[in-house]
Image (cartoon, rainbow, N blue to C red; front, side, top):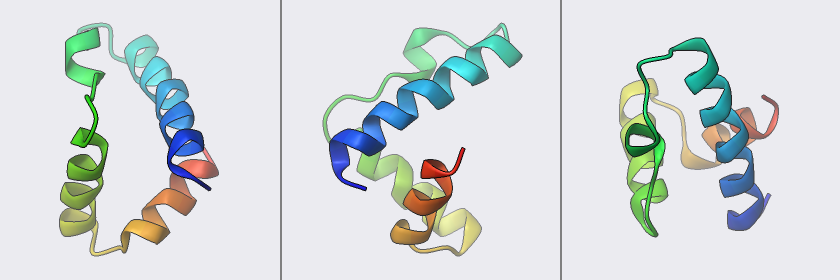
Length: 61
């Protein structure tokens, strides 16, 4: 999965989050260039999974 596909998937995921949690705003889920990698880094740190494993998991959502 390339970066564009992953970012497209993120748009789907954030839409689901916004539907589920009404208090989440566009600002909460918007990542400028480079912020997506930062988010993956934080998830990597907290889950103990690699970025590749996280990208794979996101692609399956």
